[in-house]
Amino acid sequence: MTLTITSRHPASLDLTAPVAQLLALAHAEDPVPADQKDRCREIGQRLHNLGGFDLMLAVGEYVKARNTLAGALVACFWHGIGDWQW
Image (cartoon, rainbow, N blue to C red; front, side, top):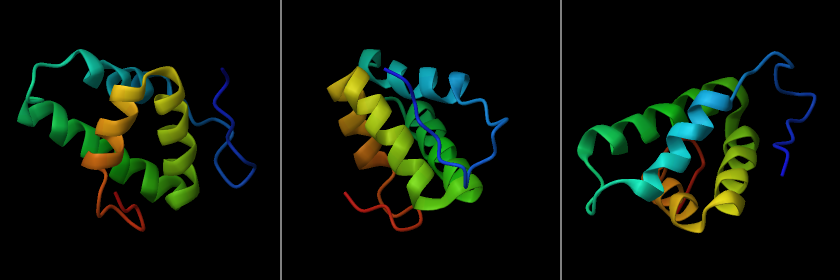
């Protein structure tokens, strides 16, 4: 599956590392350690700053398609960032 970024987002935006960190949430301890939750929120805030809700949605859907648990955790942890609601 390819992560599609619209033309409104920087073409040089490399999301490899942040997406890998988000996918790693599925393998975290239960409950997810605070530092991983904080990093997830930092990534969400950075995505919001770079491309708003649309970029967050594209990344969130990509993560969910790759791993449903990681996608659910992202959806939960990003609650309240920009227009993101869980």
